[in-house]
Amino acid sequence: MKRSIWTVAIVYLSALCLVNTNAQAHVVFGAGQAEGGAYHVADLRIFHGCDGAATVKVTVEIPEGVTRVRPRAISGWDVSIDMVKLKTPVMLHGFEVHETVGSITWSGGALPDFAYEQFDFHIMVPNQPGQVLSFPVHQECVKGRLDWDQKALNMKDFGEMEHPAPFITITGITVSDQAKP
Image 1: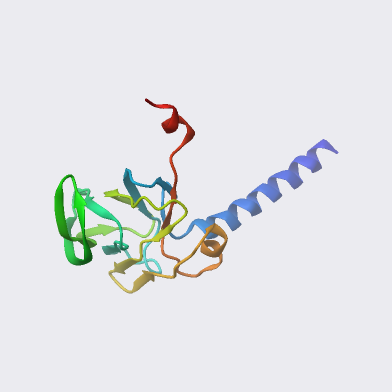
Image 2 (image 1 turned 120 degrees about the vertical axis):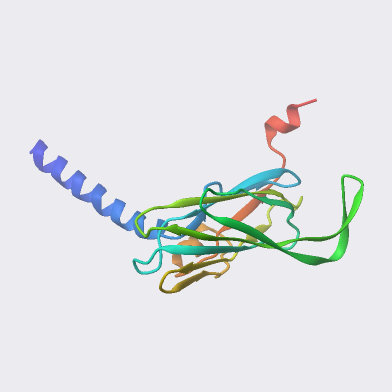
């Protein structure tokens, strides 16, 4: 009897893993939350190519309100940024800023379909707790392209979409931060 219970448990857990793998077969951030008004390293993870083809270019659109964007250089890849004019200039460290990074592109590398890579970038998160920041991603492969641009408002929406944009939810100040002098 014990053996049949273990068999059922193993089959059940295996089925859960298969379902969960499908839900995770997207482009996601390692950390789905960031503190408002703080610096944050956004760790974008690409888990697969396009129908078996290797990824050769990744472009991330930076949402309005996100500033101080600095991409990480990845060995074997070229990185570039495109600047956009701000609708309203902002003050950063005593300087009036009129433009910011609108998108980051990594290209020239080759990420096999069976592997994953993390495309990191450093950002200043707007101080707007509760806001959801969507970062549309355009993934170009040797053959084909995937546009992860459907905007989700929460994890439930994200899991139900075919090509959801990765997102970060802005949090408020943590209890441990409030206790600091």
